[in-house]
Image (cartoon, rainbow, N blue to C red):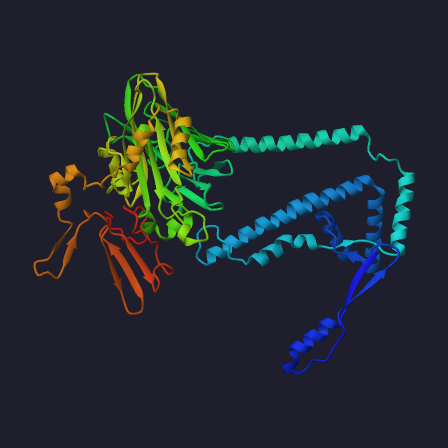
Length: 607
């Protein structure tokens, strides 16, 4: 075997002004000599070894002398040459446990470590902060563990001994029956373990107690995260800006925060009776309440309340960024039931870090179209740009998120209205009891584009069921690279009636007005002329109430940089220095209303 061995001559250090000359002279004295040992490999080489053998060799080295360890290494290598089965085991040890496990674990482990370090720097999502060179070194470091190869006389001993062992033992170590039985036993144990895991995963959850279970279904491109209490969000990998991950709906970043894809049911005769498909947001569940994961692409939800049984199957399409909620409603009572089914979710359509850091700024750039011919609300984000290194070529990417519903033939389910303004839907109530359920929603004829500065999606459907009758609603959530792709997806999977391209273009060109600024309200004048504030008689004080278009905030700060922000809804935020980086209490001033205040004083009567 030919080996290249560098030899470098030693020189005395020259004066500082001769550094360049010293480097040149040193490089000239580097010599490569060729040697051939005549027998084979040269001692310990950097050849890959298996994970199990590495552990065994380490233990053997720690518990034996140098001579004993050397003899054990030679014996192991000889047996590897002699026995086919041992070579196969070592190969599997190397490929499966070393390459597939250690290397992949180093990938995952470095990702987890990188995310934790990123959080220390203030990043709230998966962000890379470790230099790429260091990441690559740590990732491939498991392949650098050396493997023993004998040389010289030891190589001849190993080779000759292996040939003698091969001649003395039969070619087949185990009989076919033993091999077949082993495989059957392994397959049986594997099947039993998978069956137990499947039963545990599919076990029905009754009324959740304590921390809810969390489920995840997806196709690798589109993913839905759903907790057993109903909190949820969807995310997708952009098909326009490759590698970019988008949250389509806002995620709950606090266990107490009610964010998700909610579905309300409201009795037509007694509107104050409200319940929801899942425990959140209304907190009402029947004895049949259950959530379970069917497979990697689907979930099942069951609930019942006041004679209405709701059974929903949530499915992510195997190949498309599309999520379908197929809801079957059945009337178990002896009376006709008439009620409203109202969906609700909040659009994000950007990375989680972007809208969590600057929620108000992010909300300014999301516009929503209502297109009545496809029963859909479609959202776009002006901040999403095309991939281009030249800033002049960066245009709006055209990516959209959508929420739609399919009506049922026979008039058992009819779309009666919609809402895309979070502030109007929740009002001065809470997500558990929103004022929007007590108000008249936007008319289906009010189509077009609107920037609400609080983007949401809510579709109002009216359901009528006779005793024992059932009906089906199908909701669709998803993502598309363009509006045309979204419309085609909805037509195909919701089986909507044909809508002309002209009707769609009319809705896309129209503009809508905010609540309080429509033509009808302008004619009335009450909505926009009512005062939001008043001054004291001497003009030194400003008085406001909660009836302002947006929360009215006031900042108090001293010379040392300590400050507090108070708004007219009662929310308080304290900070020191940089308010974004050094917030002392949670910042919730952008939420309207604030359900989880950062600072609060409770006043109660103990008597």
